[in-house]
Every structure is written in C-alpha cells, then in structure tokens.
Image (cartoon, rainbow, N blue to C red):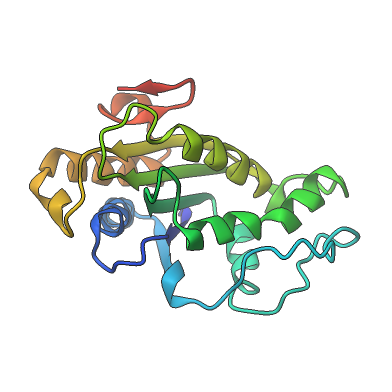
Length: 207
C-alpha cells in the first residue's frame, strides 16, 4: 500500500485547488492507497527563519505544528502540494512549507545522509489560477522541482488549470476533476502518468 501525503495550500476550504486535492485523494484511496491530507491554513507554523540551527544536525530547531510533519514526509511514498496561484506564485503557507524543507536539504546535500526516509519519493503539484497567462505556472514549477528534490523526491507530474477563479468553479469543468482522479489512481497503483491526457510532465510537456 502506497502512503500519499497531500498538502493543501489554499486558505479557502473547498476552493478550487482544495477540491482538486480532494479529488486526487479520492482517486488514490479508491485505488488502495493510504492518504493523509493536511490543510496548511489549519496548522500553526512559521516559515524558515534562516537561523542555521539545522546546519549540523539536519533537524529544524523550531518547535511548532511543522515538527511532527517531518516524520510524515519521511514515511510518504508520494507528496502532493496543491495551491492556487496568488500573484503568479504559490500561497504564503505553501511557501512556508517549502522553506521548512531546508533541514531535509541539509541532510542530503551537506551531511550526505542520502534520500530522506531512505527512499526516493514522487512529487505531484496541483494548481489553479484565475488568469490565462502563458507564464502563470513557470515560477512555481521551478519551486516545486527544488522542493521535491529537497525532501528526497522528484517532480513527477502536475495538473495546471488556468482561467478558474470563483469558489467551486472547477466543478463546472468535469474533465479536470476526472484528470485529478485518474492521477490519484495512477499514483496509488504505480500507473503510467503518460497515459493521462491533459497533465504536465517533466520536460515541460502539457498533454
């Protein structure tokens, strides 16, 4: 059974990216995965304060709601981050999660302890933006690449949706939700992401 950890970075419960995360989780659970979802707005944690406290140990010295999440990431086979686009970027809570991965980066690249949790995990990004700008997701995809690398993984696939703004509007685009469900099923069963139409894959493809 694959363990999938889903982070929802939307401040709006049942907003479009939150619904995308729920649909992905539904598909994964239906296919037999163990899924845990964490809404970042509901936990109390700070961004990295660049104190250098993790430099010698690979352990973050800040004690807050992020502390137990480190072990959850270590256990996960797949980590998913879902976030709406705010000013062409992920949300502040999502960015704080990314910054707090610095301790993991130290473990791998400074202390040379190998992959986090002893395994390479997949990373999946789900995002929705109100505008239709060509470069809407370019910056966040680069952030995701380095975030997933820091936690011992790689960016394996993404669903990127433009032109959706009103709360719940994504429900009016059933093919997008079907795509998310299929991606969840594939993640749970070691499926081939290339067989899913309309998703972003490494190399910049958006099928």
